[in-house]
Image (cartoon, rainbow over all chains, first blue to last red; front, side, top):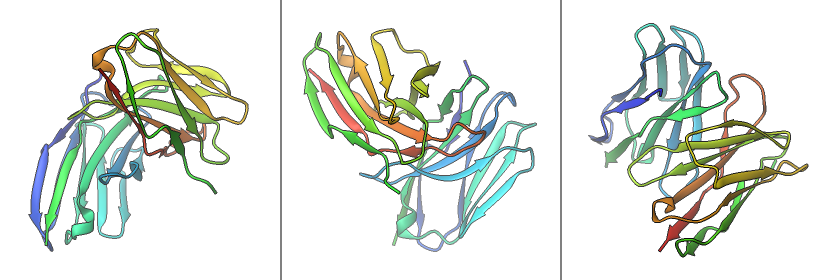
Length: 111
Length: 113
């Protein structure tokens, strides 16, 4: 069974700090890696879909990289703001039409 | 374009009962996936429906079943409810093309007592 791990489990940063967290997985046998942001009382929102080794995506202050050979993806947030507070989920889209989520990293940005 | 909606928002059922959860896909999407999210865990894949056929299934027993209708809305049915079925149930719609992002509904919170 493919296991997707995320670290850290939770993170508290000051407003303005930059931060990053990790999604790791044991296999490169997947179609895509997805990052989602899930704010409390809202629906998970898609951030990035990544497909190639060395893929990099950016949306405003948030960016992500993917290393399929070593089995990890990083999500970076530059200059964290209180509105960035959320749980960040990564998910692998496998070859069997399944999407396997990690447990998430909970980010709190303190004003 | 309309977003993904789910009903009901909350539901309380007794062990052994049956429940039906509903999901309305985003306009134009032909694929719907259902997930169970227990406290402290990421969403767990239950199954996916594409053009009214089950198109992939996670490690859930047969008492979890689904339907997708011609308008691409969907139902999740759970029979013989167990206490461990208490969770947030999310549906997500997408297009059946490679690497297409999913759009999630707000979820249905099911409590089994």
